[in-house]
Length: 377
Image (cartoon, rainbow, N blue to C red; front, side, top):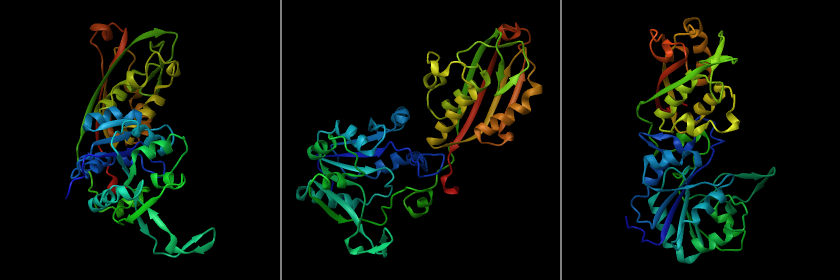
């Protein structure tokens, strides 16, 4: 394969929320064997010598992306695709930019080459498919010979695209941006193999995708809170009959806090203090179950499913045994796993240390994750 010369920057868009996908994991975080989809797609362009490769991601996911691969990562727009593209263009210095959606998973290298060969013919060169089926619009059949189904990647003149998008108008792709601003768009033959992943049913149509391997990730969480009077005690999501509570910015549920850190550790997503800082009034006296719900959603969104939780509670008081089953019930609902995937152990401090002196409680948690098995969805 002839390599593209260094006058093109590749921009891959991976900041979407996947609202139409209807699975707990975002499309860009589906694992293809042992690589997230965004990395799998980026590596399909390895045969080409781009000036630069920029991947646009969600702000909350950028650290994780940087830990996985060494591309240049840019924060996506807050609402629209056009915002994400404009953010990337601020970092582009090459004459041309090749933009594609991560959801366009199966890249045809010959199409990339043909796009480049047409670069001087127009400010925007786009692959497109003819429509073969009879098509209706607003209840009436229309001339299918005049229809084109536009695909990505799309090759654009960087300067012109920057000028268009700086007007802060929203466009669904580069071709519509150019056309609606009076610029010429050239179409080349696309490929049915480059079907866009939009709905979970599309997974069956993409022959380049291989199911994820088993790759178990383990995280450890440890949390400690001292007792304080005149506060209710919550532990493992359950209200405890006690004359003291936990001194904390939130409700102080030390068990849930340890689980949160274990989940974040297994998924390489930092720690509880980074997500929910104790100087943020939004989390003052908050129910820790709500924090756990947010973390479970986050962990699942970046490609993982929860395998099991193992919890050790170190407490001279209160007695934990009467609450174990209820804790499992509450936690299993939040984690969306079976009760038998949660183990809760309890021990005293044998009258030693702060636990033994009945000054507080320590909890240690271990969480095990695995790649989400999208092929079974």
